[in-house]
Image 1 (cartoon, one colour):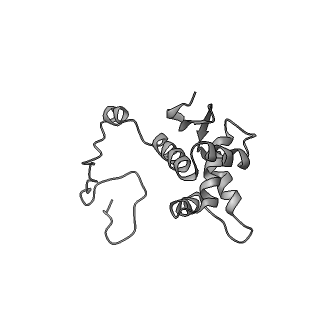
Image 2 (spheres, one colour):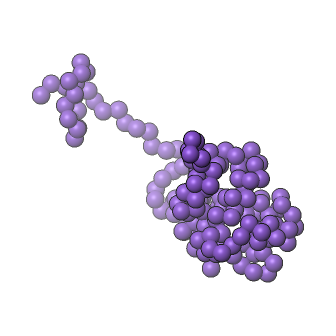
Image 3 (cartoon, one colour):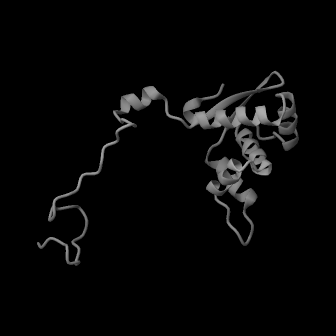
Length: 145
């Protein structure tokens, strides 16, 4: 069973349940897959390509999400699953939406934390000369000791 708090989601393919997880290892694997000796690719770079509907990148994101719980899962099984789920777009939309939801905080947790997402606290300006925990600056605006 998928543990949403760990970023896991369940996906049914052909009557079988699979658990997907886009964890740090999956993200690193994506970076390794697309990087070359002359160009390092970040996870953010991969997401840019996913948002541009690069099928190569979408397939890779979905595949690595299977590997934590299904290490022998293949690209071929992924393609077969897409077909069984009614085609590429319904499968991709459902799987990517599920992975995105896994990263969304539970509204109850947000409420318990006391954070108001619609009106966040603003940073307060410190009065000039207020002491801090860092070293004393030698710049012109520093307070004298």
